[in-house]
Image (tube, rainbow, N blue to C red):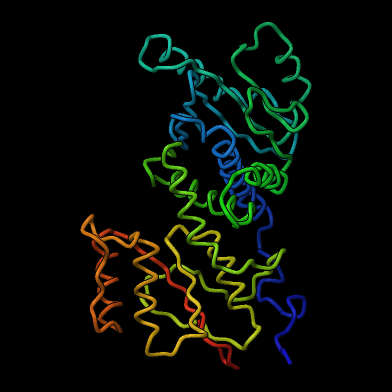
Length: 345
C-alpha cells in the first residue's frame, strides 16, 4: 500500500504566495518571454536549421539568426499580454536598418531577411503601418493569426501553444523512440545554454545528426515521466557538485519519475543504468562498459577498442572515469537499484 500523500494533499510553505504579487508577475513575464523564444528557436532549428549548410545562432545581433541557402534571417521575438504596438518594434526596426547597411556594404554575405515573431496580434496603429507603403518589404510580422512566411514556423499564442507547434515539427524528425515533446524540452535547454554563451551561440546543420543521436542515446532508456508531471516539495536538482548522492524514498514515491523529468532539462550527458538484475559485484564492471560504449564510442582516441582492466570491478570504473576526464566529459549517471521499501537512486 502506498502511503505517499497525493499532490493535492501536500501543504506547501509557499501556498500563501509572495508579498509582492506585481513583482512576481514581472518575473514570470521575463521567464515566459525567454522560454517562448527558446522554444521558437527549437522549432526553427528543426524546421529549417537542418537544411544542408544551415547555421542557427541565438543571442548575437538578434534573438535568433539563421543562415540558410542564400538568406540570412534576423528574428526578433516578442511576447506581450496585449496587442503589439509600434513602440514595441522601434528598436528592432532600427537594428534591422543597420544590419541592411552591413549587407549592402559587403561586410556580410547572403541576402538579409527580417522577421518579428509575436504571440499577440498588431494593434490598430501598427496595423496601419503594416498596410502602408512605408513598411519595409523585407520585414515580416509573424503572429498566430497572420501566419508564418517563407517556411518559418508559426507563432503560438503562449508558451504551451508554441510547445505544441514545436512538438508537431519534432514529430516529423526521425530520432528513434524518443518522444517529440521530450526532444523539444531537451533542445530548448541546449538553446538556453547557447544563449548564455555555450556552443559559441551556434547550432550547425552538419552537427545536428550527431547531436540528436546523443540525445536519443542519453534519454531513450529513461522511462517517460507522467503527463502532466507534478513536482513534489523539496525536489533536488539533478545536477550537483557532489560526486555521489543518494535520493531516498519509499517505493512509488516518484524517484524515477523525478529523474526522467529532470533529465529532459539537464545540459550534462546522462546515463540511466538499471542494476536491479545485476549482482552487486558485477555492477562496477558493467557500468564501466556502459560509460565507454555511450560516451567514448567504444574507442580510445583512435587506438582500437578500449581495454578495461582485466580484473574489472572498481578498477574498471576508475579507468572509465579517467577516460571521461581526458575527453572533458562531465556525465550524470542515475543508478536504479532493486525495488525495496526504501529504494535508493
